Length: 388
Image 1 (cartoon, rainbow, N blue to C red):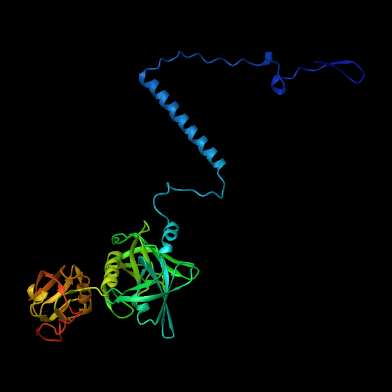
Image 2: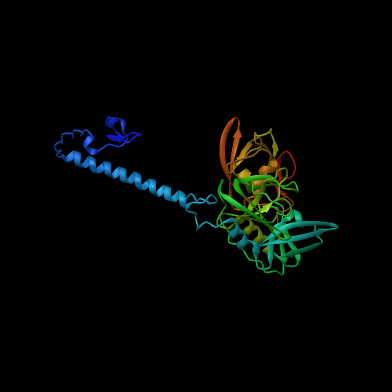
C-alpha cells in the first residue's frame, strides 16, 4: 500500500494481515473442505413406517397446538363454559312452578278472631283438599286462585288420621296429574300459595312410610318426608316430582322444620270418601297395646274376642315390634299404621312371644259400632270406632 507524507513524498506501508481487517476479499479466505458425500440409505419396510409415524405425530402435535392457540385467541375472559350437554327433556323448576301454580290456591279460615292461612289443591271440579288443622272449627272460609279475589267456601268434612280436609268452593281449579310415591333421594319441589306469588322450595325425599306427629298431636303414618320445607302457609300445598306431577299434599308436623306430605294416592282416596260419605272407613284390628320401653315395641294388653287380631292368633302379652316392616315404638304408632289400611286389607305384624319371633298376617275389618264386642283381657273398650 502506497501513501504520501506531509511533503507529498510517497511512503510505502506494509499490507495489514487479513486477520486484522474487518473486510476480506474472497480470494483471501481459506476454503472449508467439503464433507464427503454419504451414499443414500435404502429405507427398509420398518424404517419407512417409522418415518411416516414420526411425521404423523409431529403433524398432529402441531395441529393441536395451532387449534389450541386459536381457541385461546378466540375466547374472552367473561365466557361461561358448559360441561356436558343439558338435558332438555327434564323440566326445570321454573317450568314446573309455572305449570303447577294455577292448581294451588290460598285458603283463609277465621276461627273466632283468629285468622289462619293455608294452601289447597284442586282434586275435582268445585272441591279443594287442604290442611285439616288450619280449617278445623272455622266459622268463615275463603278460597282464592292465584291473583284473584277470595270466594266463599264451605268445609265438607275432615279426616284427622291423615290431617286432610275437603272444602267446597265455586271456583275452577285445575287438577294436577298425579304420580306414585317417589323413592328416597329423588328430587321434589314444594309449592304453596302466598300473597304476591307462589312460595317454592326444592329438596329431596328423605323418607317414605314416615311416621310424624301433627300439630294437633295426632300420630300419622304412611307419609313422605322431605327437606323441601316452606313454613307458614305451606300446609295443604303441593309436593311435585321432577316431572311436575303431584306426589303429595304438604302437612305440618311437630318438632321439625322438615316437611311431610300425604301421598297423592291417599289424598285421592280421602277426597273421594269425604265427598261421598263424609268420612273414611279405617282398618280395625281389635286390640289394645301399651308401651314396653323405648324402641322395644308395644305389648298387647287386650284382645277383642272374635276380632281380626283374635282370629290371627295374637294373644295378650305378645310384643308387636313392627307393622308392614315399619318399627313400632308406641301404641299411637301402632294405631296409625293400622289406620293406613281399609277394611279387607291385610296388615303384617312382627311379634315377639316367649323370646321367639314370629310373623302373622291380620285381615282387617271395619270398626264395630257401639256397644262394642265384649273384650277379654285388661284395659278399656278395644272395639270402639277408631280403636286398634
